[in-house]
Image (cartoon, rainbow, N blue to C red; front, top):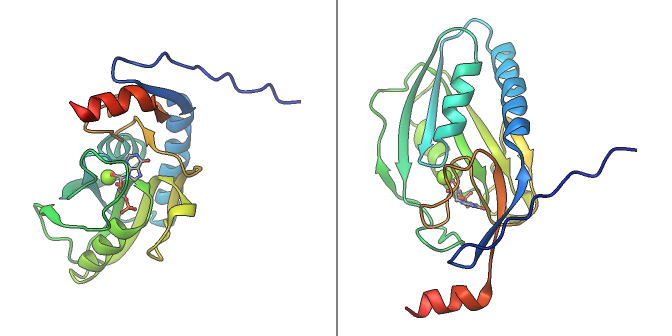
Length: 198
Ligand code: IMP
Ligand code: MG
């Protein structure tokens, strides 16, 4: 019988926030190695151009890029994000465009998480108009329950339940991006309410 996974429960911080580990740093790294191999198998001889969505996708891109053999280049794009709320507004706005053209390139769009799918739907439409040779999507995490737009990832790290997660690039009000693992964020309602009233 497999041993139950040890869950490390951290104490709530002064803001009343608690993070429970969902996917360890080791599991993330092993999964990225496998995804890198899969991507290279699909495009054995092509230069690959990775495009990450700032800022959440950055750690995923840098780890993925270092694991893919052969010629790899990358670029960044930014879209408007959640801000402080844990719910998506459904509104997507481009706030930083690419440095170079993607025409004729084999492009892998690298995102931290696929939630409603609105962000990727917008970006895929925009990128398709720019005539890449191939356009694929790699996401570290997928919350299939939340999907609104019909978007699917070609390369997926982990499918996760409908919980708000932080770490490994993902933030809550710009915090927690630096955690080496992905964890579920919970808010102590009393402390959070007090903080919101301030
Ligand atoms: P979508 O457009 O709803 O698919 O949302 C994509 C973006 O929302 C992601 O790139 C994240 O920036 C953000 N997001 C969605 N779910 C979470 C979460 O659980 N934690 C942190 N950010 C999230
Ligand atoms: Mg993001």
